[in-house]
Length: 473
Image (cartoon, rainbow, N blue to C red):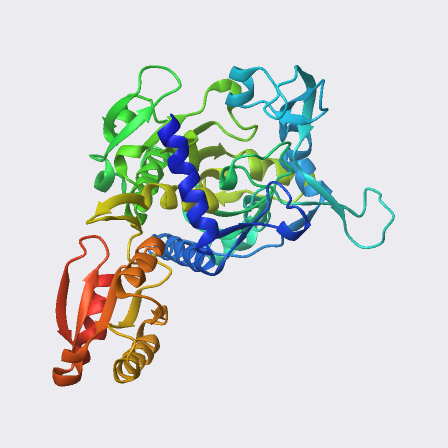
């Protein structure tokens, strides 16, 4: 456990030092639950979001964007004002409030001062604000959204017409969500402002057990931790047929979540899918599975939730707004059901940083390396002159400018020894380093060094861009 904690500390230290993550409002002492993404972190995050958008766009999903603030009646209808709560305790000694989580439940003492804890009731996680005039009344009461999903549900009728009144169809949204967490203490794991990438699949409830793509994924083996029974690996076909996973639509999207996370570089041996127990099920869910990452520091942590929301949301908004949310079919009115994969982008970023980070001995030195997949690496390639000589620097800058036009995210570095420059790029996950030496001036070839293997090969400059694009792909 000590080694795991040390590893977590080193990951977070690297993230701060190298410009991935910074404590927000640090010059004012910081504010828990809020983080800034530095230059490298922002690039990593944008590329992850872009990969997610592409993944679901290729599945045929539409994308929308809705406001971060909504009138109170929206969240009254959705159940969040009544049900979106956490149980809390307060320390009798230091008067700090804490959410009841695994650490509190097993420790039983205040994590700050060691004092005795006592129950403090349910705490609603919604951030309240108002729309318009300062006077607070029912007409201008508003809240920051705790999920992006409600903006999709409210637009259901327009989206249905956009899809020519046909089911099924899927809609995605990437954006900020806000939860006034009681006591966030776990880096990117529990934030008050965070990014969600959510997909809502509207399906005829009569067809939930016949997904057209299920045959293509049914043989997928997945580590399942069901609410009842033992954890183990099982094919999706067996899990659905035995009723462990409720239906083919839910099973299909569990498979797609697994596919995306693996593609982004989450190690399969540190990934499982855990079913929610009845006492932890969200108020809107009929069934829910969490894709969990095994963190060296935090243990099993949720990074994606895959829920069968049934017709809860559409029925709730129909009843509250008096607007018809049904699809008219020859058999009568159908209220569609919703399958929802909901990704926590910030948590996935933490999982990528932790699982990608490694320390290893190279000769007489320790090498720190961040093994991000090339497609997510903030810097795709770095260009160095072998020595700090003007003729080499001039040629290196020409190569740098040429690659920058092609790849955009390219770095140039002529500070310190070549070994130090390699180490700096290894730490931030740059897949390839390109060195200009005196042979370059003779035959227009450069050296490409691979981050993971540290092997080098020579490539002609006019073939360099194509070689890198092929490797990065």
